Image (cartoon, rainbow, N blue to C red; front, side, top):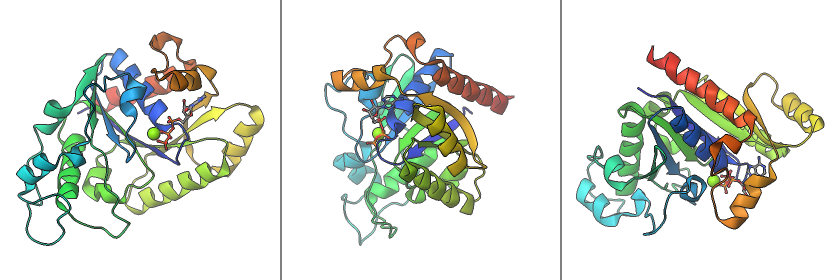
Length: 262
Ligand SMILES: Nc1ncnc2c1ncn2[C@@H]1O[C@H](COP(=O)(O)OP(=O)(O)OP(=O)(O)O)[C@@H](O)[C@H]1O
Ligand SMILES: [Mg+2]
């Protein structure tokens, strides 16, 4: 079983950029990788340079598929539907691949924190569980801050939860909340990636605010990342040009993947 990684963090800290680069780097190291976009605003395809022509429809928006698998129309709250729909064929059927990274856009469901249960959440939950607990590849999941809706069994199958922070204190508070939540459900394997750090002073503040946390790596401000975003292209088309700090992170994860297998 490949390493399962989830990348989380406050809006705009660099989750998608980092998830995409880590996925590509692990693939470049010879791993089979599935990248999962579970953000409500999906943009991992662009960061990976995966074609969006024809447009990618998130799994949670595939009404016919959801109806077929659950026996109920999406958005239906009352009534009967299958709680364990068949999902094992979905990753291969609905993903697109580039450079050894298979992208699956699941999307997510706004459950308003109150644990709504509807046909699309049954499919999403089963699909994430399948990806984390049953599929062999290395998994890199780009998701928003919340992990509650994923389901505890699935979350426990994740080997490394990465909270991305930047120099903004709010991103660090979000990472602390996220870590707290993860610990409450029994997870210890939480690491921080500090992104867009431009000075030793910033580094000192982040270290102080997140004292006791495990730091997986520090990524500097890199104007090529922002420039690629403006140009609508993926950053570092030639992966060898990516910052060494990112390669170090990818190599730590590669080592963790190999340790997991042996
Ligand atoms: N190390 C970096 N140096 C410079 N720019 C960066 C860096 N990391 C990310 N960026 C830029 O910051 C912006 C936000 O990055 P990204 O979209 O990856 O964040 P996100 O956390 O996924 O955001 P969202 O919460 O909206 O999904 C993008 O314009 C990206 O190009
Ligand atoms: Mg994003």
